[in-house]
Each structure stands twice: as structure tokens, then as C-alpha cells.
Length: 341
Image (cartoon, rainbow, N blue to C red; front, side, top):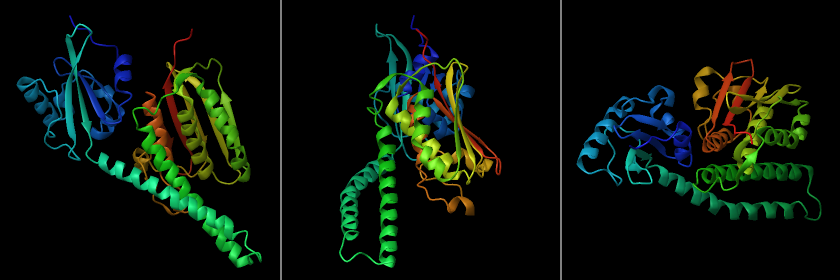
């Protein structure tokens, strides 16, 4: 008799996928959803495990039942009714080593993927002219006779603008790279506390520039996780940079790491302006920024938190935020602990 994999195995099965993916048992009942599926349908995996696919989306459930009866569904087909974005939908059987089918996987690939590919091409084309402009700016700063005070101010504005464009390009590239199936190529045992502590050390000067107290607290009994140190460091950097950016002069940021419920949990807590509840669900979308006068005065790309979300989800973890206007914000990441040797 076919055996269904454990919840941990199902989570690992879907972790490499950036598209929405659903695992069903042989009878079409939901075993697991990945985070892109939760966002696509605005649901939670806990609410739907064990439910029929019809409960997630009637059109998708009816499509699955019809094609399962008709042909076994081994190829991409036209989208079921009422799915946003006109995606391509693929369903394939999942089998054991002996060939016995124990379930199905459905993948919903958004058709806007071509837009991401086009953006990636444009980003690469921008890097050469940006490099040339930066080199020309350096040469202008070394002309003789020296630039006047007004000319120096213009050169400073040009330099600042080029640096912002450079950061935007690098973050756009990071968003694309982390979605690649080969992104997490350096997975190993490591300490999440070490990753965030090292990131905090890299940001001491930025915090000092605003007289911000940057504290790191590590609770006893920290365990290890399986992760790509480079990508997790990028996520930590983005969270701490974000906290410094929005914390006022003389404020405080606390980075705390501990174990809870089989997870390594890190929280970055600031005493900045806080975030309205209505804006919180969209904070991790690319380019999204809270629309108010105070936030608009702070420069940013709206990509840092999107990178954090992609990194943490690719590691099979979760990301959360708690905040109230005027009360600061807490951004947390939780990753599954490895068993101790």
C-alpha cells in the first residue's frame, strides 16, 4: 500500500519551487501547500490540510477531477476557470520507488514570469552604462583647476544618485537570483544567531551615525539550522538596515535569537514609527512602500523585505511582522532546527 510522506518531507519537496504548488493524496485531498500558493489564494496551509481541492478553489478542483478521469494529467494545460493571471497549470502523479502512485502535485506557473525575465535582461543592460557614468564622475572630480563649491555639490548629487541606482540594480538582481532553483547551492549546518550577530557588527557604524543603540541578545540553548550562509546573511542585512533606516535618532534596535517550538527564531525590534495594520500584509511585496508623508521622506526601493521573504521561504521558514503606529515594529524569522547530534 502506498505510504504518504511526512509533513516535513512534503515541505522539503516543495521548498525549491518559487511557483505555487499543491500536493494532494490519491483521492485529491490537500496534503501541503507552499507559501506562494498561500499568497495566490490568500489562504493558510493549516486551514486546508485534509480538505478536498474544491475547498481551495472550485474551478481548480473540478478541473483536476475531470482531467484525472480523462487522461492522468501529465502535461501543462489551459488554466482552470477564474484563476488570476492566466497561469499555466501542470499536474503530475507522485510515485514511490516501486512505481505505486501515492498522490499528485499541481504547479501553477504565473504567466507574468516573462516580465521578470525581461526585467532581468534590462537590469544587466543597465550595469555597463552605470559603470561608465561612475567612472566619468570620478574623472570629473579630479579635473584641474579644482571644482568650485557649487560644482562639488552637483558632483555629490550625481554620486548619490548613481549609488542609489546601483543599489536598486543589485537588489533587483538579488530578487531574481534567489528565485532560481540553483540559488541555495551552499547549504550547511550553521547558527542563525551567528548570522544575525555578524550582520549587526557590519551595521555598527550606520547605527552610530544616528546614535542608535544596537543590541544583540542570544538565549541559551541555541540550535543549528540547515542554510545557505550567504543568502541568510543578505536577509539579516536587509532586516537590520530596514530597522536602522526607520528608527529615529537616538533610538534603539534589539536583535534577539532563541529557540521556540522546534524553530530558531530571530526578531529585529525597533522603536520607529510603526506600521498601520492595513499595510502589513503587503510589506513583503516587491516595490511596496507604506504611503504616508513620513515614510516617503525616507529613500528606499521597496525590495529589501521582498528579498528577505524569498530567502526565508526558500529555506522552509516563515516570516512575520507585528507593529502599531507610534509603537515600533518587530520583524521575525523562524527556521526549522536540525536535530542535535
